[in-house]
Image (cartoon, rainbow, N blue to C red):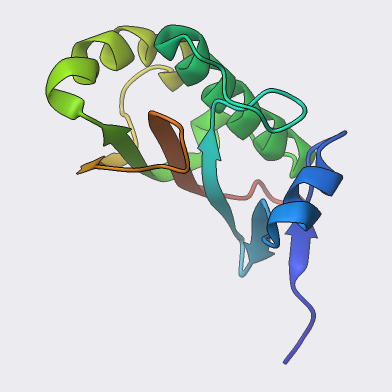
Length: 132
């Protein structure tokens, strides 16, 4: 097996090493990003849902940036929400701040009962720009 081409955002490598996963892997012109939650720099949960969603997108954008990409390069999105019946509208008011213009990426939204103490998680697949 060849070594994985791992992408780490600045300042968060220890967090990923502690939790034993790669934040993102480059492969065959694509970037596969692990689920990002609204964690603070030390990995703790942001308690406010709106701030937690913004932090999740900021954490995602830091990984995209480290790979030479932006959200405009994202082709597929999966979001996980605890209790989507009560949190969906709050979350979806924030999404346009980060989503960009249409056409939008594909999306799968999944309601879950547990996200390691978080309320929202986003994972994506992005097409890497040429030369990235």
